[in-house]
Length: 639
Image (cartoon, rainbow, N blue to C red):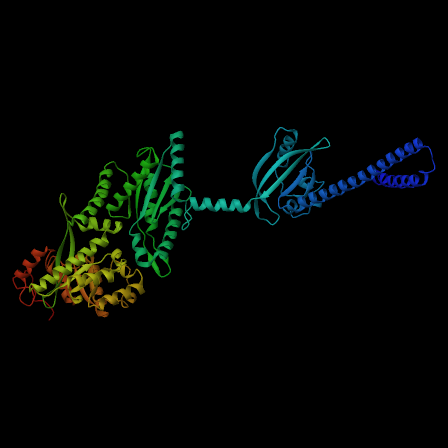
């Protein structure tokens, strides 16, 4: 029986006794003062008894509350999702909850009273951490907050955030540690960092990562008087892959290219993907011969065939190179000069590399100026159309003309389409320029017919970019506006355009042909079309590309290719035209292999509208055939 319980019983006995005594003896004593004295004494005893009973009930309540509080505390510690433990000066665990024990695949009973090495065979740096704990208990360190990776009993690496703080109990010092699992947060941080600094498609470091790395290389090189080189790589004509085979195929090709680049550099440099088909490489040397060797290796490796599903790709790249400190001492300058050198590589025919040279500044400045002036040319209508006739070999009749755009710059004279069409396609200006060419060609052809000139089919080239911008609506709108019948219009489309999306292309071409419009595939032999693909397309004409005609009469391989293409076209009932015919010996071979039509300087060079009408008047008879005085020997036409 404890002290509190004993006081309870004593108080009850006294209280009962007092009440009995008071009742029994109150009337025995007749003296009033005696009664008052006895009564006062009994009241005092009664009050004391009541106080003892009150203290008992209060003490009982406090004890119950303390027991409940202890039970709650133990429950909180045990069920807490945080990892909690207490260690003494020597490193023995005096408290550990289940969450902490679970990290080691044990129970709290396996930990309490033991050192860490007793239950954690993977423990490292025990002495170092014990010294840290003792510093905390000594007050040398108020508390320690840290984040650390931890090997969970499941084998998974976890991250924990821990706070260690000193506690004192009965004069003894201990260290309390409360840790939380921050693995999910760390993974999210890692994901955010990866998304911010790495390319999702290729896994390569991205543009932001590149600029940070370039700045770091600059700082290090300035401190050590070192050097390095920067490569700016742009894949040649990669846009055509997206336009013809779709972005999914383009993405797969970019993944293959990134692997090739990484293999070329291996551990000697760093590869980054800036965006699209642009990559950069930081090479920790500016030694000319070494940099040159790496550039040549990249060129050679990229040109090895890449196979994706049923497609074979030959990738070429243009590489611009700037050197630190020769070509610049800051991020912006080095990057811009590598970019400038890359454009020079493209101007030199692509599939090559170029080191930056000071004279390159003017070249790239001219290019940007040309883009600016091209936009102004659209506003000021500085373009004109030239026409080049086509002739039927068998009959000598002029069957049509091809509309060719020309830019008459007010200061720079005539600018070649080869110079401004690529820029127009990159900037999207080709859409408005192409629609103007189409409308002007149809308008003039209608005017010639009304003026009594021989009826001719006018051919207009469509860029792949135009083909993606409601080409059906544009053509219908132009024909309605000009009044030209569809049968007098031919649209020339490249192989790359035709392969963009087979189902979509076939649908568009069928719709155009329903209006009587003729469809020609231009520069055939330079793209990816195969016979199995070609035979499903609604086409009228196949134009053999100029490179196969140029050396037709001198090169047996070119002659074999040209004749094969003629037979290919005829096998699927297409009209075959050879373009770029300049010599009668070329015409002779084409005639022997029954090519249908020719186009080139042998018939006529491109002419302005007035020049063309004058040429027609001078050189064609009433049936639209070339007159005898035209410089052609036609005696060997089809017999």
